[in-house]
Length: 111
Image 1 (tube, rainbow, N blue to C red):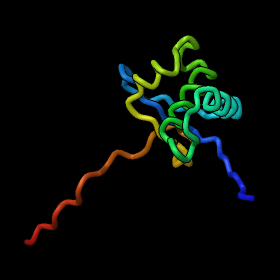
Image 2: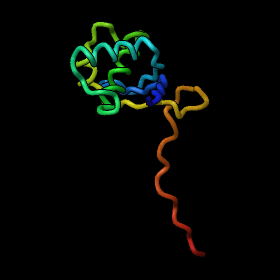
Image 3: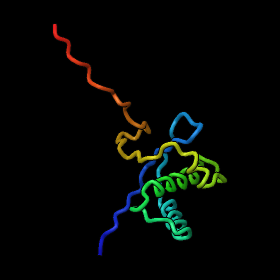
Image 4: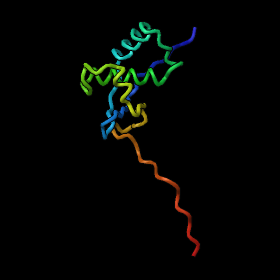
């Protein structure tokens, strides 16, 4: 028997029409809603469709926490999601997404 190891990721979501991403912590109710909805609609499993899973978890967590209106359907949320990802790399807990990409290193100047 294989062991299933689940974590509850903090997610970062950028919706169309918003300048800043939302950061929200997923919880058990979001996972349970995923399990029930996936079974009801015959959706693929987490390992077969990780972006569907993460987008759904993000929607569920955003609704649960009041970051989006409860009447916003998953389908409309999915269609307006520009970016979704985990924010677990942010160890200091300040809700910052991370450092901007620094670009290439400057070339040394011979003098």
